[in-house]
Image (tube, rainbow, N blue to C red; front, side, top):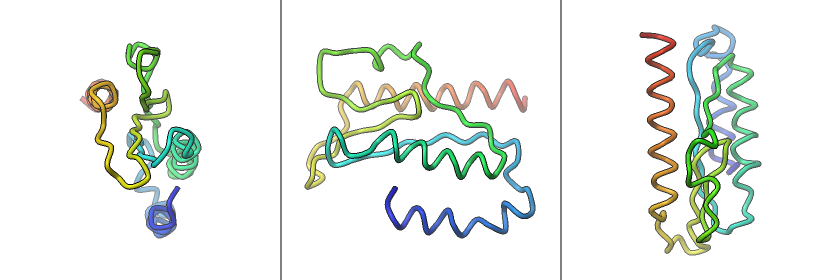
Length: 117
């Protein structure tokens, strides 16, 4: 993950010490400049911090059809929604990538409703 995000997460020690995030839902999404820019590593390294906080991690299940589509280059993983931005930031999220993100958002909201009413 980028240094700025790691710095931000490293400053959550007081929340960890007080247990403020225990039992809360956490979900992660990312953008990388290239297809092989570390999307899954970024997401899973973020998950480690969420687990240390005692959070419940929500990803994107394979019931999201865009995760198995092979008709175009696309981001999206079971660890969270992703997009490919191109090295200069010129590429915008594809329709498939946006649908994975929407699916993830709905999934988080549905689970939060079921867990916390």
